[in-house]
Image (cartoon, rainbow, N blue to C red; front, side, top):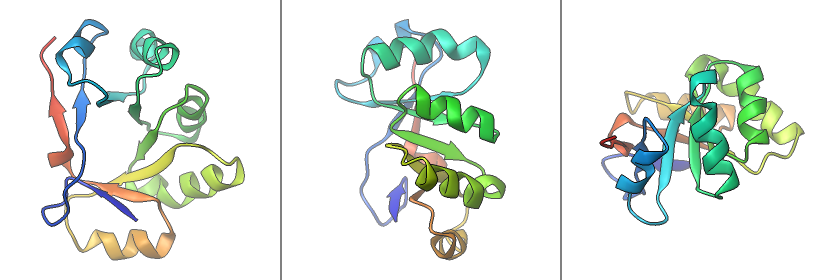
Length: 130
């Protein structure tokens, strides 16, 4: 299991962006974080075509499949979707890792038993200026 934003384990941060221009305010070779929505498709398409690593937060299976098609490095889901998302990722051999948002450390064990690729705490996401 991989960990992002955990207090014990050093990890990379994700940079939450609001526009294509705000990508310029992120460090070189950083991973951008974006929520999947139609209004963000321009950013997602730009990042995909520019091979900028991205972590895409999705709300359902359809968005999960879209995020994979756009070449997301990480697909972030809520705990309720974790088992299904991981199963689909394994079935379709996604290149992306499935991450689950967590707020408490006790959630890690349950997600480990489900076989998810990793967990992400909110400390791993840094807001950028537009």
